[in-house]
Amino acid sequence: MKLVGGAALGLATVLVLSSCGSTDSGGGNNTQASGGGQVTLKMVAADYGDGPGKPNSGETFWKGVVDEFQAANPNIKVEVQVINWNDIDKQVATMVQNGQVPDILQTGDYSGFVKDQLLYKVDEVLSPNVSGDMLQKFAEFGKVDGAAYGIPFVSSARALFYNKDLFEKAGIAEPPKTWDELKAAAEKLKKAGVTQPFGLPLGQEEAQAESFLWMLGNGGGYKDAGGKWAINSPQNIETFTYMKGLVDAGLTTPNPGTKDRKTVWEDFGAGKVGMVNGGPMSIPIFDAAGLKNYGVAPIPGKAGPLDTTLGVMDWIMAFNKNGHAAEIKKFFDFFYTGSAATKISDTYKLLPVTNGGIQKLSSDEKLKPFLDALPNASFYPFQDPKWAEVNPAIKQTIGGAVKDDPAKILGELQKTAEAAG
Image 1 (cartoon, rainbow, N blue to C red):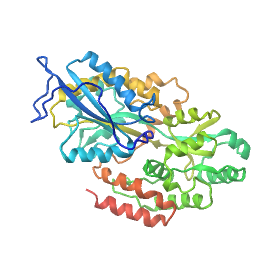
Image 2 (image 1 turned 30 degrees about the vertical axis):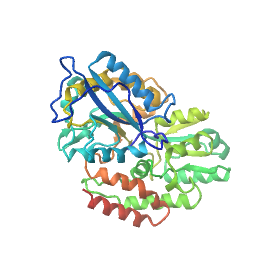
Image 3 (image 1 turned 45 degrees about the horizontal axis):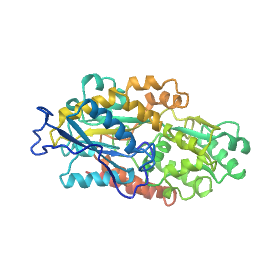
Image 4 (image 1 turned 90 degrees about the vertical axis):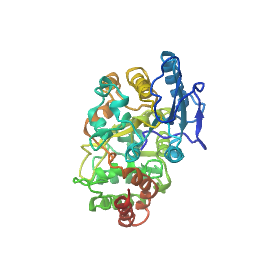
């Protein structure tokens, strides 16, 4: 689960941010950079930028973080390998299988590593004052069986963006609050010549997010209130049947199952899309395209606006194989208490995961609707280790539920979830 579109890199971009120091990875005993010895932390991070060499790429961000950290901690070197979102999960799985486990991983999920006992607990690699400043509702999702392993890295929330100029052209007075109003607005937009009345990205980049937003609008979700998988619940089937009706009527992005959100957001920025679900990380894309006259509203549900939103977070975690808990703690404490966490929010319009960070951004009017929505957020079933297997299956196939029979596609995903693990 990622917050912002990754770079279109063909291969992993390896960024060696410092000269390699000697490190002892055998037996996990090298826990201190003492006596003048040098410890190298190996980190794998997801790319939040637009590609290698671009000003806002993940490479540039992490180089700044590491340079500042190493100036204060000369005995701890950090090597960062930045990998785009489409490849990172597969490449990390290969690393783990080959025994080439990093010390630090920053990506969209942590739970799959817990069952194999690969991760340090949070209290082993994060100081109490830092963990105490975390948004507790978010930090709770870093726990498996009561023990915390995942540390929230950045967060986000979602809302409906709408193009005010296109709404005026189509004679729409205000953003829709219900599905009926959404369909009526989409029909007016189509009649006014808008090629994509509603932007619907259900491609592999992040289909699980768009799907969840629609499920929430009908009282559904990936699990029921009792914690059982409910992907093919009657509510969800009804939801996707409604969505399929929009697609069949030509009121959405064509072939949604093949479209990633970054592409659809770029189309919204270009004035081709009337409405789209998005987050604060969408704003730089709209700004880059020159779109200024847009509004933000709660996401429409079947009977009214959502009283919740999709709370999204990416995670950072520490692997225990190399025994570098002390050095990792220094790096994590530096990241969360210094300027780095604020910089990533400023650069990519992502939201902080600490109370202190939220306070610093509270005066940003563009971010305010999302900051306000965070306390009432709903989340993916992160804590279930099966999510690591179910999530990729959803990304790959749920887009077919607006092309083929929704009950069939959701039923197959339900079987996958029940058989996973």
